[in-house]
Amino acid sequence: MIYLDNAASSPPYKEVLDEYYRIWRDFFANPSSAHNEGKRAKEILEDCRLRWAKLLNVKPNEIIFTSSGTEADNMAIKCIPWGALKKGDKRKKIVISSIEHKAVSNSAKFMKDQGFEIIELPVTHSGYVDLEVAEKVIDERTLLVSVMAVNNETGVIQPVKELAKLAKKYNAYFHTDAVQGFAKIDDYHNLSGLDIDSAAFAPHKFNGPRGAGILYIKEGTPIVPLLTGAGHEDGRRAGTENLPAIFSATLAGEISLKMMKEMNNKFREYRKLIINTFYECGWNIEVIGNDALTIDSIIALRIENPEIINFVEYFSENGIAISSGSACASSEYKIPSPILVAMGYSQDKALNFIRISFGFLTTQDEINKAVDIIKSMKKF
Image (cartoon, rainbow, N blue to C red):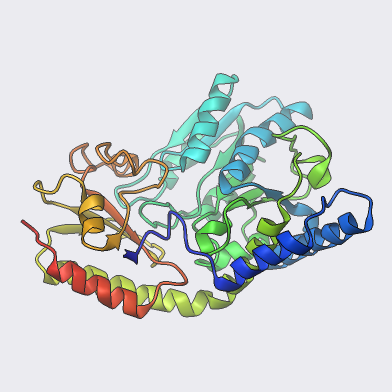
């Protein structure tokens, strides 16, 4: 099987797996324990925090370790507004885009039930958040704006700098789900240049482990804990830290960042080869976001072929693992892509959607084999 679903989850680097087991074996103690074994674990934890601060060009105390990117997004969308209210801020307007990951959009729905006003920004047919509408919607009543760095289905890079600047005009907080941005775009390893207040990262998207997430919270940003209990993570996130996952996630981040330029060049070539193969073989395809700025590791395609009901199953039967969008919803293949619907596609056209995504361990040999498989597949 040729694995081309890295935007959903990526296989871990060998050294990441090795270090995961080593840390679990040798540093199993609770980092909060007062004995020497606990202190050894705490030293490793804080070293990881320093290394992530270096990776993102931020301060160590601005890094919170979580269990996932989803938890990190939940903390930002829920806990920044709650923290602001606790400090006397009366604003209750939260602005998100209409193409956010469910970790953000469902958190926003939760906040609506808590009495907050939720506004969704539309996107253009190219997949960009509409800046003209944003200028009208974001105002002095806005408490928080959240727009993702890169859409996880289309790969379209969102205008985060411009939107953050607009939010700052009204002293609103700005969060970005940067899960698909790290080690793909320069901005997301230099957060100090973005003027944002928080960002979420998920290491399993860049060949790290599941069970760890990173939340950047700019110093001075109000936040209360999402999980209450003991005083872990400087009282901001209760729960014993998953040291093996955090350590190996840190290593994965460092490896991926070193490889970023080289792999982005390879992704660009992989992308051209796969798309050209579909065209050359006579597939009736539309490249989603073709007129937009996208990351090269994601190819979003709409395929016109009424004879194939489930493209994911069809490709899988032929030896290629792909998806029909976000892994959080792709098992429900009869549901149109909500991202394409937000971009203006009809329900029917939004059904015929697939996502092909490369990772840092994707090889030229695998791409060549995928090309051969696509050439051999029946188009009906």
